[in-house]
Length: 166
Image 1 (cartoon, rainbow, N blue to C red):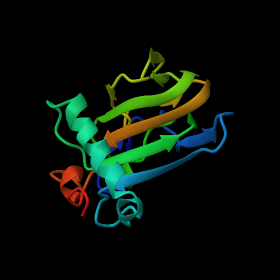
Image 2 (cartoon, one colour):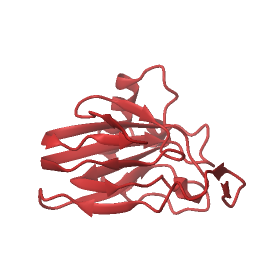
Image 3 (cartoon, rainbow, N blue to C red):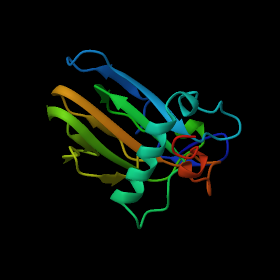
């Protein structure tokens, strides 16, 4: 077991740093909105994209009303990740919820060798402990990944959003 700064553990050698690549669909990128632990800078995208942030946190509640609201969302465009486990800002994180959107084919999420079609289908998985990656795809692919980093327990990202139009 590999221990992190605050004592969380995960199987040694199973997880690697996130390996990010762009698919052949053009421009790609990733950013986060919501909350980060106190020792990590807060996402600049909170101020840049307040309407997107509000809509994305509301979508989580619509998709999974029984799920505790997440503190953070990773927003990805045309990102193709190689096998990895999430860093959880270095301290661990909650179970992730992911959904894919766009006009793409392929791009399934692999979790420990099991394939999940996430195109307009929300899937929960343990991104901190389970290796996961993106299968190749063609087209325009966006993903939203909701999670709560350790140190942000009890923080609801939706509560960080300014009122609509405000």
